Amino acid sequence: MSETSFPKSEIKVLLLEGVHPVANQAFAAEGFAVEAVKSALPEAELIERIRDVHVLGIRSKTQVTPAVLDAGKRLLTVGAFCIGTNQIALRHAVQAGVPVFNAPFSNTRSVAELIMAEVVMLARHLGDRSREVHEGKWRKVAVGSHEIRGRTLGIIGYGHIGSQVGVLAESFGMRVVFFDIAARLPMGNNQSLAKLHELLAASDFVTIHVPETPQTRNMFGAAEIAAMKKGAHLLNASRGTVVDLDALAAAIKAGHIGGAAVDVYPDEPEGNSDGFVSPLCGLPNVVLTPHIGGSTEEAQESIGREVSSALIKFVNTGSTAGTVNFPMVELPTSPDAHRILNVHKNVPGVLRDINKIVSDMNANIRAQLLATDPDIGYLIMDLDHGVSREVRNAIAALSTNIRTRILF
Image 1 (tube, rainbow, N blue to C red):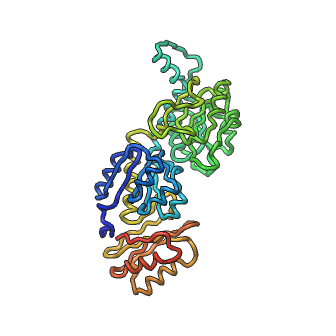
Image 2 (cartoon, rainbow, N blue to C red):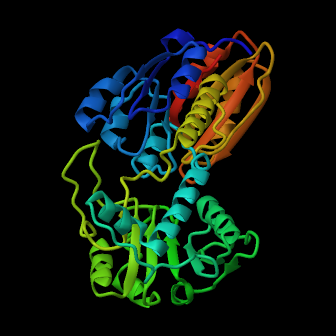
Image 3 (cartoon, helix red, strand yellow):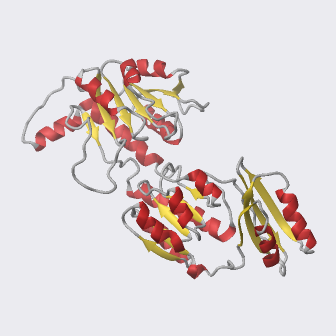
């Protein structure tokens, strides 16, 4: 493949929030100029830093707002080195012609293992027993402690993580039921239930694995908690806005809920600090962790490789395979051809207008691929040498144009 028209050494990559060094190494191996920052940046500082950045890499704390995207005049793409992308103004990124990539699979195992560890902890009250011994207290009791074998685990959201939890739970000898708004293929002997309240009534442990959407915000409140079996346990490592923590705390104090494990919260500190407050703090048989579901070295390295690979592929070829907000287009490179990338408003006649430009200039199209979503179209086009710059300028002058550039 030919070199990109813009020198690789001048492509600037900004990685925030301690993205795994494997990503830094991958970008550096491509010849990109990489800057790594261990923390998130507030909006005002990020606006200043992003003005000459081409590739931005973040995790869950950095807020990529419309103002940030507007300031990133040279920004080509954003990588979320995590699963969620709700911290990014995705529709605004589309309108700016900026595809966003994430890592939907890389921390699946890490989260699933944490959930199973917490199920055992809750069944045996290990959080309380450990704290007591640290305080010099010896409380050797069996009352209220149980094996998890033969117990029922209810999984809300049976995607990549939920289904992995189901597989692990079965290996522990648990009965597994799940509820999802989409049709899902059960793994092993996992059983799908048609109604959420049916799952709540049947489960000794309920674990939530849903994305943050308007539908899931506050989806698990006092009514859902009341529908759980008396003495059942609730686990949430999905999103902090899903569960009403005040209602959960009240149910634990009332003795209706036997315990809880929570890894995510409605309001989380921007960085490591003291003084965290939650209505669940200090309650019995409650395991609280600081959003570490995917925080293993294995998961972070895998995420670093997955997202950096997608970003590099986009920079080098224009491929949007795996993007979360863009039409997905991937076209093999043509030898001795120039590649033009075009993002345009999705209105009738754009491809006709572009092809007329090419035809009027007597250019030969080696390959061409277009995909659209309701708002935009994304076109990759390979042309013979000689007229690519003139074609690019003419396409960029169209009223429907959002962004056009010669890749190589």
